[in-house]
Structures are given as structure tokens and as C-alpha cells.
Length: 286
Image 1 (spheres, one colour):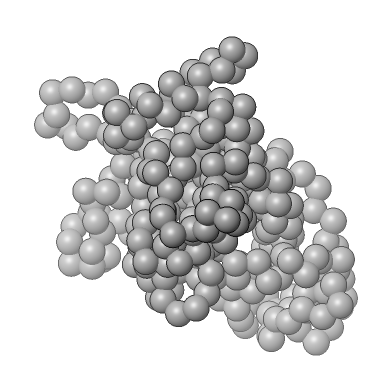
Image 2 (cartoon, one colour):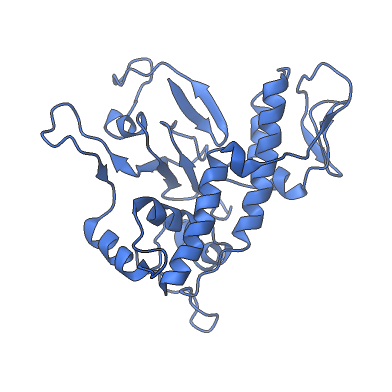
């Protein structure tokens, strides 16, 4: 089966669900929900070192212990919970606290958009977690515990943030229509083999003679969790020769990271405290 090894890096593995088998700790009680049609919000509870919070990503398949960060313990929260064969109730359940979910639906009810379903709520959460002002305001809290989500101040704010979250979700799951054109041509003569990847003057060099051109600096430096995906993806393939599919995949990664940075800059939350209020308290959890 396929497993999310790192952001934008899907690998194959042999998954039996048996503890201390091919995979030592397969965590079947959680990962079984990710083997079927599902979305999962991946997070870390604590951040080691001084790096800022960027520890949120969406996966649609089982993950490894370090899919989001190499040092911290990675958590995944499935959107849906699936019954086992022994359960009398064979319906799929939404993995939200019922009272909090009902309250958020009430706050977000809109004359045009109506009452949000679970996917709209998921996208709102995803949008909030990518809001730069949210990350900056609660920087210290986000290093020591799970993120808390502020209630929207109005239905309009909810649907605006949710719309940004939709775009981010589709990008991060590498939906081709959402990614669109990837204007980063692969140039130079050589064997396509990755030697020492580096970024210089808008070019991502994979060896001494071949490079991806017209690359935004933000794509090369952008963090998701503990990784810089544009660098990590190449470094994990050092010594390997890129084929046509690899080249197209890497071009998509570059586009996704640039678009993520652009969309994040458009996300705002009126519920954040002002400079005068400070950030001594955590947001009320939604």
C-alpha cells in the first residue's frame, strides 16, 4: 500500500497492521481510518529547538512517524472514523466533538452558503492554521501544545478562511487542476542525476550542469513542519537520476510552495488580539 513518507513524497510499503511485524508499530487503531477515503490533519504537539510553527499538513493516506517532522512526534487526526466489522453501527462518523461542531455550525450559518458541513469546517481549521498572524500571535503556545482554533467572529470570516483552506487542501493533495501550469523549465545537459542540490539566482541546481529555472526563492526556503520540501525531496534522492515523471512532480512541488505562501498572505482573522491586548492567553478552542 502507499504511505505518506514526507510532504509530497508518497512511498510504497507492506502494511499488515500487525504490531512488531514488517512495520514495528503500525498503529492500526488510527491508521486503519486512513486506509479508506479520508483526510487527516497532521500536527505536532511540541516543537523542539527555535524554529517557528509550521507544523500542519493534510494527508489522505497513512503516515510515518516522521512524515511532518524528523524530531517531533507526528500526530494525525482523521476527519472520518470508520466502523470495524464487529460494530453494529456501520455508518461513517465525523471525528469532531459534537457540541463544538454544532456551535461552529451555528456561528458560521450564512444566508448564501448555508450551514457548513464537516469538510467546510475542516477547511476553516486548515486555513486558520496557515494564517501568518495566527502563527505569530500564538508562537510560544504553538511550540508547547496542540493548536487551539479561534471561533470565527462572523459567518463571513468563516467562509472566507474556509475558501482559502479549500485551495490549500487541494494544492497540498497535489490536485492537478489546482496546481495549474508549472513555469520552471528543466534545463542543461547531463544524466539528470542528483548530486548536490543548491539554489542560486532563481535556479535549483541538481548537479553541476542541470537546473530548474525561474524558481521563486520562497519555494526553495519554504517550511512545512520540520522540512523544507523543495530541498528535502531532492536530498532524499541524491545519486538518483530523475525521469520525466520525477521532473514534472518536482515542478509541481515548486508551484505548490509558491502558491501556499501567496495564499497564506491573504488569510486574516479578526478574532486575534490587538497589539494592546497582547497574546497572554490562548484562543478559545473551536
